[in-house]
Image 1 (tube, rainbow, N blue to C red):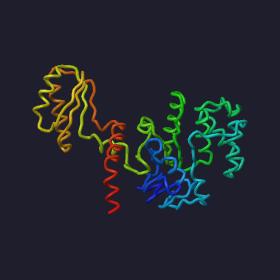
Image 2 (cartoon, rainbow, N blue to C red):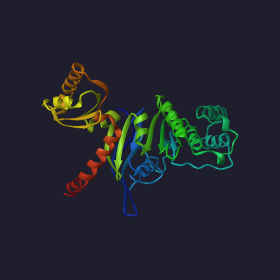
Image 3 (cartoon, rainbow, N blue to C red):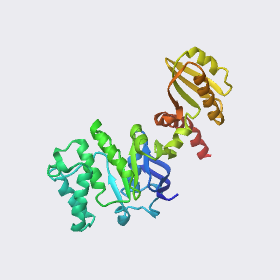
Image 4 (cartoon, one colour):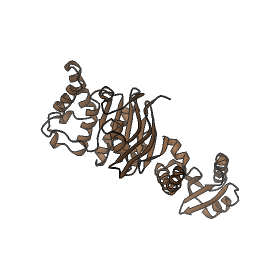
Length: 326
């Protein structure tokens, strides 16, 4: 698998006091939409700034497109588009003037720059605002301009730091739609940091979960769901719940169950027999007067997976620290 971003033992300590990023091993596949997920203060923005060569790591290495990224890697940064959190722009410029300014910085000739600006203004739905001063823009409109800006140089890698933060529902939906469309371009890889689980689950193909500067998971969305809560099944039923729970007690692979009105959550002893257990449950429902409203594995919810991984990291962190010290 070809990787676009690769870090080894990446660490950043501020003032010999605060460990913002801790021994980070990151691997971002080519053509993926990679969600860098973690609570506020987990080290996401610091990591992005190191990946861009804007701040120097305290330790570790960074490779972008298999080349070392350093603070003087100007040519390498030209292949990257960056959208910071809450971007700010010259108040009195219009989107067209600002994008033209950015194009000149990248050295894009006029004959290519003007069509590119026109394309971006249309694709980010800024055509109606093209002659308006940026200072009059809403948060959502500013974000759309930010996306247009980071695409001006037609980068191979897009890095977006909390692109949906602070947006109203309409602005958020617009930003998500744009990112989803960008992800369909096979020439691009997208790296998005966020603490909003619903966004990551909606458009990302891969995810890295970070807690207190430490990467606690790196893989696909489906892998993180399978890793956590894979031993549970949730059924929404209409019918005799007492008879159904009595049946559950006869099944050797069911460890326990929890019920609420119309809902049963079943916990398995051994995930190896997951398929057989599900078939037995479905057969019982089919043979008796029940209506199955919904069915899902406990691992299908990214929020549950995320919270469980954070809890495991919190409880295991001290023991790992002792092991490293030894």
